[in-house]
Each structure stands twice: as C-alpha cells, then as structure tokens.
Length: 437
Ligand SMILES: Cc1cc2nc3c(=O)[nH]c(=O)nc-3n(C[C@H](O)[C@H](O)[C@H](O)COP(=O)(O)OP(=O)(O)OC[C@H]3O[C@@H](n4cnc5c(N)ncnc54)[C@H](O)[C@@H]3O)c2cc1C
Image 1 (cartoon, helix red, strand yellow):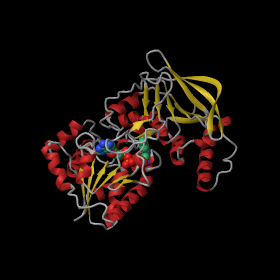
Image 2: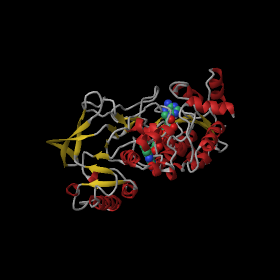
Image 3: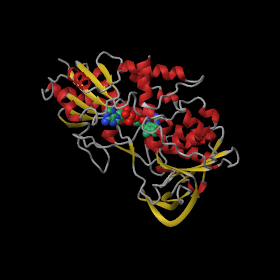
Image 4: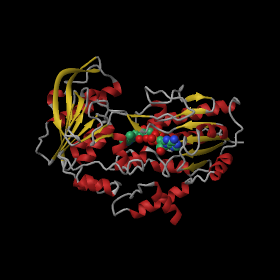
C-alpha cells in the first residue's frame, strides 16, 4: 500500500514537496489540495506580470502535476470545504504548504484611509487573483508611495512606472493594464526605514530601474555609504553590487525621462495624510544604530495619492494546526509538526527568499515522511479513496488538473497577440469555461 500524502497548497512549496516525495523512490500517492481552481500560488498571483520568464518555472511543476502519483484537487479550501482533521483521518501524512497570504499591518495613523493598500492585495489585483479583482485602486494620481525596499516593493514601483510598451507584453488583466497605462503617475517614492545596505532587494531587480524607457531612478548621494563595511563573502558581493547600482542611479538627471522613481532611505512612515483619502505621507528621518532605525525627530511630508505598503506577508491560522501569532507561521521542528503533519514554504519559514528557496523545505518534509513511514509511526490510511467520496457526497465542485488545463488553454487562446495569456479573474468564469468546453 502506498504512503498516502495530502499537500495543502499548490504553490512552489507544495510542488517541491510532491517532487521530493516522488524522487525519494517511496511508493507514494499524492493529492495536492488547492483553494483556487488554478495552481502555482504566488507564481501566478504574486510574481510580477512583466516577469514572464520567472513565471515559466511553473512548467517544471506542470511535469510533477502530470505524474501518475499526483492528483490535483482545485477549488477545495481546507478549513472551509474540508477540515484539516478530516484530511488527517484520510491521509498518512499532511503537508501544510498554504503560504503566507496576508499583509503585515501598517500600524500608523491614517493607514485605513482610502488609497492605502497592502502589497498582497495590490499585487493580487494586478495579477488577477480572484480575491482582489474588485480592489479597484485609483491610479489617477500624480505620485505614489511604496513603503518597503524588498523585491515586492520594487515590483510594485516598477509596474507603476512602466510605459504602455512595457505593459503590452504582460498578462496583466485588462482592468489593471488600462488603469496603469492611463495613470498620470509621474513620481513613485520607495521608502526604507534603514540604509541602502539593509535593503532586501536583489541586484537584477534593482538594475531594471536603470533600463525603463519612461522612468529614471533617483538616489540621494548623501544617503549612500562609502563602502559595505565588514561584510564578507556572498553577502559582501551582493551589497557591493547594489551599492554600485545605486551610485550609478545617483548620477541620473531627474528630467532625463518623463517619470521618476525616488529611492528614499532612512525614512520611517509616521502618518498617512489627507482628509477623506490619501493626500500624502509623513515620514521621520532615521539613523541606524546597531542595525535598528532610530527616529531623529525630524519629519518631512511627501504628497501622493496612493500608498502601497510592502512590509511583509504573514500566514493565517488553520484550525487543527498550531500557529504563532507573533511570527505569522506554523511552529515546527525543521518542517515537522508532529507525526503525520509537516510544513513547507512560507507557512513554515515566513515570507522570505525566492521560489527555489522553498525546494529544500519539500526535501525535508519528504525525508520526515519517509522516516516516519519506515518506523511504522504513520501508514495504512485510505487517502484518495476516502477524499473523492467525501467531496462528491457534499457536492463540492473540485477542479482536476485536466480541468485546469482547459482553463489555461482558454486563457492562452483569449490572449491578444504578443501576450502570454488573458487570465480569468473570477472563479465562476473559470468553472464556466470547464463546463462549456
Ligand atoms: C509579490 C511577490 C512577488 C514575488 N516575485 C518573485 C520572483 O520574481 N522570483 C522569485 O523567485 N520569487 C518571487 N516571490 C517569492 C515566491 O513567490 C515565494 O517564495 C513562493 O511563492 C512561496 O511558496 P509557497 O508555496 O510557500 O506559497 P504560495 O506561493 O503562496 O502558495 C500557497 C498556495 O496555497 C493555497 N492555499 C492557501 N490556503 C489554502 C487552504 N486553506 N486550502 C487550500 N489551499 C490553500 C494558495 O491559494 C496558494 O496557491 C514573490 C513573492 C511575492 C509575494
């Protein structure tokens, strides 16, 4: 009898775990349970629409999904259509790979004003995530502020600064492309509480700002340190590259191109300004001591009509699994929670790293499952043979991988020339395509 494994979530962590289980040589039967009808998590719903090469990594996961041992159950939310305890009764092992889908809260006065968005919502909107298709942010503004200096902040700032030409080859949904290409935004501000060496962005993403056709990057020379200090090895090389790129940006002229992206370091947001909507942001100048940003008491205001807060993501609790409110993850011992229950990816580690950073989590979870099965601690449960009757008896409309392929084919077919796909936004549209094909 195979080891029956349920993986909750079809993002990178889920698929890396499935691949590692297959590679382990164990006789496995893997069911990937996903709340959306579409697979691939943040590859589809997070990675920027103008970074299609990155999104192509899903082709690798496609191969895993099509293997005999694996079955996809989309449109099934664990905690709603089926509980974790139901799944644990059915499966020898359950891997929690549901990611960290919500924004860390921006806790400053005025953060609830219309025109302030978290990055999870804003990025989900421009990526046609069904949860955020109705967000409707007003981009009819002259300036936007992005809080944070990681890669997510960089993505948001870049998309807000791109020209029509840059957007025309993306898979942005029509509503987002129209809003972005018509937007009169001239200035985008990126605010980091600490200095350039503390910023988390990677060099490839940073350098892209130097190559945009309509937008020039602006950096204040006096915010750049002379060198990277006593860093060593890889970290030293990364920071040196970023510093060199920022130095080049500091020499660019503000009137070279119609739009500007301003990097503002040592600036901590203290208040969102405006009466009934965002009209600006107040920031406190900081200095960095012992790695921490300390307010100097000097404040300054920047006018803007849109604020996107990209200060990190966090997980949400799932009934039946432990949860650490402070860190927003599931507490675990190197991916193991208890016999039969494991975690991988952002819900295990928190929201950091790139897609491939989730790969070792899958390998570790597969290792735990292998060891516990070998020791007799887990095994003997029916898996899929119990899941399918459960779903059918309750009329739960699940989407198979071949249904997803139908959705995908329609998206590709509906795309204008030069675009990779035209995404459906609502779950109903996706189900209708399956029904009508
Ligand atoms: C805006 C943004 C841009 C990024 N850009 C890049 C990039 O360009 N390059 C790069 O290498 N990395 C990028 N990353 C990082 C990368 O996307 C993550 O490392 C990776 O997606 C995390 O994988 P995960 O599987 O843990 O979570 P996710 O990708 O979030 O996948 C979790 C999956 O679980 C599903 N799910 C959630 N709850 C349930 C439930 N209750 N029941 C069933 N299913 C559920 C979700 O719908 C989702 O499909 C980016 C991240 C963000 C946020």
